[in-house]
Image (cartoon, rainbow, N blue to C red; front, side, top):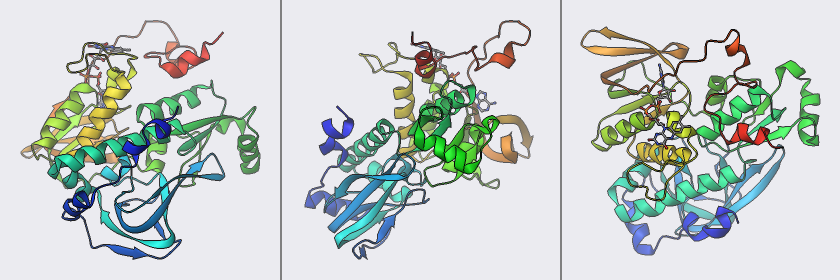
Length: 373
Ligand SMILES: Cc1cc2nc3c(=O)[nH]c(=O)nc-3n(C[C@H](O)[C@H](O)[C@H](O)COP(=O)(O)OP(=O)(O)OC[C@H]3O[C@@H](n4cnc5c(N)ncnc54)[C@H](O)[C@@H]3O)c2cc1C
């Protein structure tokens, strides 16, 4: 059974009138009225607040594959919109429209939503659980997110799928050989086989065989880094060490930026089951551990930029400056290097040319499926 079937009441909780009253003091603006059918937020819009419904209803929908929409739920008074992206002002994965009688709703932008979660333990737990479960449900429904059209066992499809899965971003792969809709789109856009896979971002743009960086930019998941801002802490690496640093520093009120060249969770993110991590007596998958740490870091206001490789560190004046891929510069009072280990590769000629095409390191469940039979 899906998350939405088994945990609906936790995904879409109804706040009591007392809880609505205590939430009000964290709102980022006054309540707004929307007429029937008005759009509160659309798929792909950035900086969308979470809305707490005070009166009327909000119908929420997601994409379902290439050209369809699917209903998710209807929010009623005491219910709130949003999922994990709203914690960081990232683009919305769903769309919300005022129901047939319109609605009145209170906005909570990312900073105010985080303040609510930290300022009210009772509400914080309810809201955080709901946002995470909604993301889990969107991941289960794949078609709500990025759509990759190509050959499922090609290195580029595996690379993109790994990046999206490791980042906790919903996605769906359509096999260009057997999926009619996917094949039609490839034919209509005239994409040459060498330009596959074709990637459709949730907000509509089409990318041809994008790099992980191009896909992340299209999805709006890399925050704009202000080159003049002086962070208290810049962390290189989003493995368990880097994410732990982010949670502890941000929860003490320090401004934190985490940069990782590849994916969330580092090596641990590739582990099917970790049995020896403190606090998880029944074990936890590396991806679940990384996802929890990521959400916890976002909740305390840490900024997380993936994939961004740090290429050099230079001391300019009193503080270090990090020079990163894409000509980004990061200034910070403190730099924590949590870049993990790099393993020696076997010394075999031309090995690197076959990486991802038969030779893999850190193989995941995605590659395992290719070995069926
Ligand atoms: C398949 C697998 C299973 C494992 N299972 C277990 C287990 O069950 N129990 C256990 O205790 N340990 C396990 N380990 C080991 C454990 O995952 C590591 O010890 C742990 O991840 C180290 O954490 P870390 O944060 O120090 O570094 P890493 O997890 O290695 O993370 C470092 C991060 O830094 C990033 N990075 C590196 N250089 C740069 C740069 N220049 N710019 C930006 N980013 C950069 C990398 O992309 C990476 O994401 C496992 C490892 C693997 C691969």
